[in-house]
Length: 216
Image 1 (cartoon, rainbow, N blue to C red):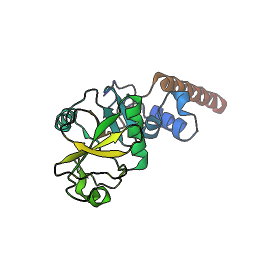
Image 2 (cartoon, rainbow, N blue to C red):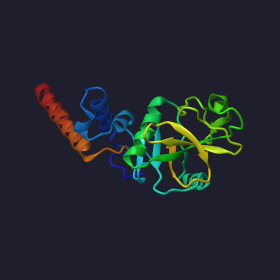
Image 3 (cartoon, one colour):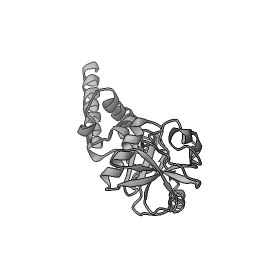
Image 4 (tube, rainbow, N blue to C red):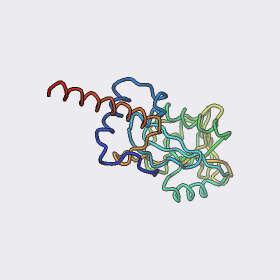
């Protein structure tokens, strides 16, 4: 977690920033906010992890080392994460772009299964996510997964974002993920947003003083 920039006593400041970003239509770029920061108005626990990125309610990390599936699983656990599962076209595209941005041709996802006969769609039901989430979205390449009598892992290619099934012993990169924690305290905002909000608070204070003088 980063340093608390806005703590419990500044509730008015929080409401102001939330109102500015979510209601008034001030652009995210104007305040230096990412869309996720603007939506959540919160701290994201994965900030600061190398090669990390956020989509929806998850933080993703593209590994910097090429390891076997089992070794990646151990690294992910150490980070408090797991090899990522994917549940929508948007999430799949996001992970694909994460790989491309970091120069990664292919990477393990968190899916495992055995395709002992038939191959292709006949084996879709044989695969599942190691994090226990449902296999409610698939993006297998044509003819995948291929027939194998051994346990295989889902691998994404960055060129097409499609999935392949490969041996767990291959040394390649991987994508880890974890749910982000949305919390009211601390609220991390870039300096530009803080200065903007402070200026608006100052204008509000001036307005209140003027009203007092008029009413006195």
